[in-house]
Image: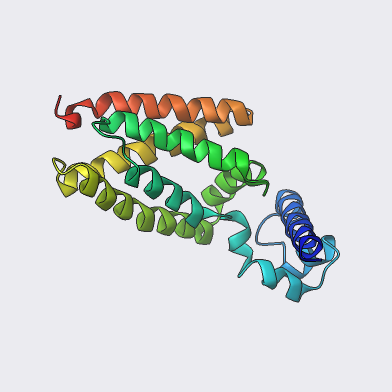
Length: 202
């Protein structure tokens, strides 16, 4: 019985996500209401709020989980692992978390990027998430790399996040596939890591 309930919850959550993606794409973010998303998923509006606190939360699905993925990678630094190698491993961990997540995050990614450029509230939410996550990751880096000062750690995290975000965004705006976006992100990280080699102390 528990398994059946869990499967039903997953189906309902996925139906809400699919409905939101379709309506945001067809009607626009501001023009789409929670009631319309719920109706398209064939559930009551109160059911929507059982899964998402707000309409914004649909677009920033699992954002906190992505931050924890990065923190977990830093905490698991291998003995003697150079900073650049750890950042590359962090990217691969993020990719794995996306691949393992059956919650339409890839489907949301290009839409989220497009809407963030046009919707001030969403842009502010995205920036807030980034501003909250980056200092935490920088602090974690200082703990596992005692030779790093806080400013250098912050620069490392900023380089990583900026390279990943902008390279992926450019690929999306050029109509790239999910694979193209991942390849662009990986290329961005390579460029950032090469620029960070001086922080390894080697």
